[in-house]
Image 1: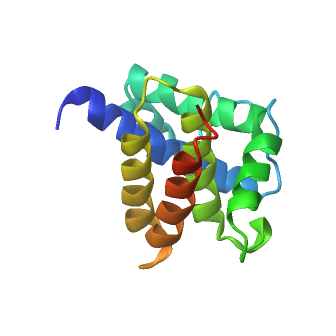
Image 2 (image 1 turned 90 degrees about the vertical axis):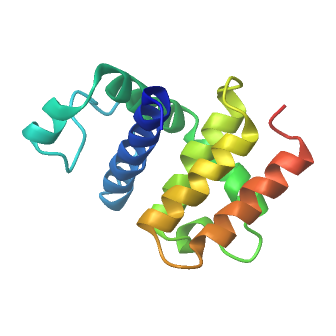
Length: 146
């Protein structure tokens, strides 16, 4: 795995973890201080590279700044499961993925979906990845992010 890929993968994990913490504590505020990431020790913070930190902050900040739009999209594609019934982990994987599809045109949609599925397989239950893949795939096929 090349360094850029692993840095971005780690940054996505940090972003999901941070958004999970903020969501769990009902603190999804775009003005949240991101000097440190909730749930990470000082030692873990010091082990992060600049690229990981910068990219994680970009994902978190961008997701929070566009949360209303992103949640609206998730809600419109999750017909049988209201947003508040989607697990916190899955909800935040979907959030950063929709943010990337909407605002990070340099990352191919297939990569965004692949990373979301891998995050779900690592962080959520055994079947969540199918739900996440389905929502993101339908969103991409509908072409609403272009």
